Picture (cartoon, rainbow, N blue to C red):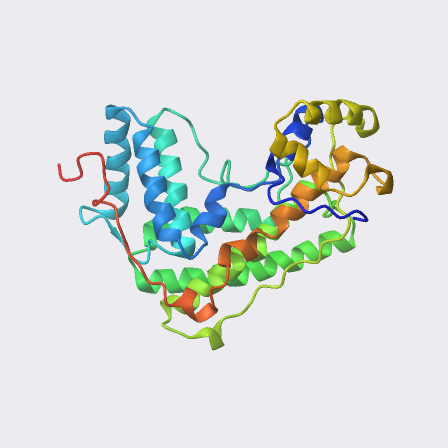
Length: 311
């Protein structure tokens, strides 16, 4: 992008732009960043409480029974408060809650709502691999041997997924530069890095054994703007002028419109897109690999259970 725009939070501008020109929401489910962050245990506990609080008494009973069937009366999940296990629990909470509300959910394919929806229905292969692993983990989390074996297997599968992606790109079979596909591609190495991290954790290893995931280089994305940006630009600017001062100031921080080679709508969409690509780094923050490996918190489902656990 030729123009420079320093905006602390692109959200308000992107929201207004999306109302005028309905381009995709590039932000992945917050569970990804929250559960793969150093504060994962805190985020998981909060999510657990929020999910339970959204249920009726009967739904809560069904939800709690689902957890008991999976984890037994003890209700403890080994290393459940950290990393990929925390993410798998968060997904399980959402799944059980939806089932308690009578929703029919598939037990295969991409986990609904976790990834960026693609208008053509295409998801990169690693999205299927990640979904399989997250669905499996709750059933083996308390079995150290199975967890190690399966985690090693899925680490290797993600490598195979990368190889198949390379072939797809070479053969131009899929537009890998498409905006939503690019974000989903980013989630692959993001998750893969934490999968490797967890493998070292359960092996009681050190940072010397940690294999960093290679981030795929990002070119110029194909932005799916479902409008004529040139025509919609005036409407967008008019709406911004009627918005709050914070949003107006955000737009003013951008370079002068005359210096830009693209429309405001495309510019704002790209800003949100680029902002999302930084999420893996934001999730880790200033924490070292060793400090992340050292996180070994289990998760006790009974402590914050709102339903009757012992029945």
